Amino acid sequence: MKKVTKENITKEYQHHDQDSGSSDVQVALLTRRIEELTEHLKAHRKDHSSRHGLIKMVSRRRKLLDYIRSRDEKRYQDLIKRLKLRR
Image 1 (spheres, rainbow, N blue to C red):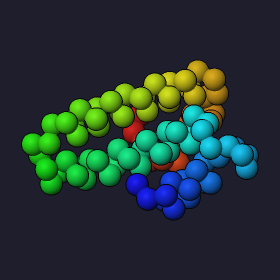
Image 2 (cartoon, rainbow, N blue to C red):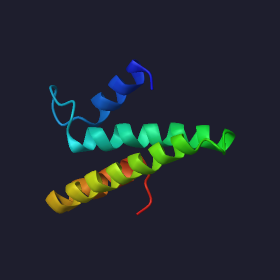
Image 3 (cartoon, rainbow, N blue to C red):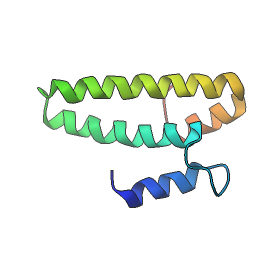
């Protein structure tokens, strides 16, 4: 992922100006990386190490989303809607 893309995602999902690592930002960045890796795996079906990395990223995103949901249900629903995730 390019630095400019990462900065844009961070600006879009941050809660305040100095926020660069909140759960929302982490989920948004992971979602972008998951999308990129999914496209890679469509072309390279036998790349099992990347597939393993994808599974780990999806698991980490799921845990972060569960954390957000336990803290604030409305924020969780908004984030799911903004990222267009199935749930």
